Length: 194
Image (tube, rainbow, N blue to C red; front, side, top):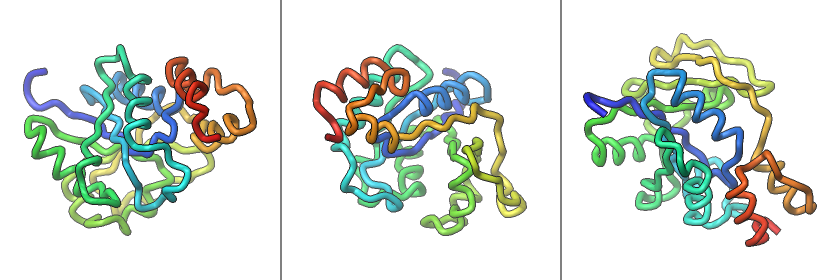
């Protein structure tokens, strides 16, 4: 890559990573100005319970398996070395130090936008970073007047959730086509979430 590459950051626990995440990342990596999309695996989101999370390294490994062979997608573990819970602004600062030649863009579901002003150092975040918002089923977009660097992007509207995949695994139902074959193989072999 020459010049400053724009890298999309898709944050999440990826518990587990699923086809909806991959379709979304591929869409942004191939249909926008982004050179790549990085899956930032969060050890612990300040907005989520820890109890149902697979260990962080296992979730990272599943993301690595899911994106293998796609040079525009990558798993990123930078939050594993940061204080917890993980705050987006601290992660961005760490990524900028590690990759000074890149410009980072946050990829965010429309359902997260209304709560953004309550995030750690939200004013700084909103001033420094472009944010691409994608639609979420059943979520209306708030007025964007407060968010000068936010752009609403067209993206596939997918109603696939990690919660339902975990429930399917517990019930002994198929998760085929909800996750990649490589991810399904590991989840089934390790009896994850049972």
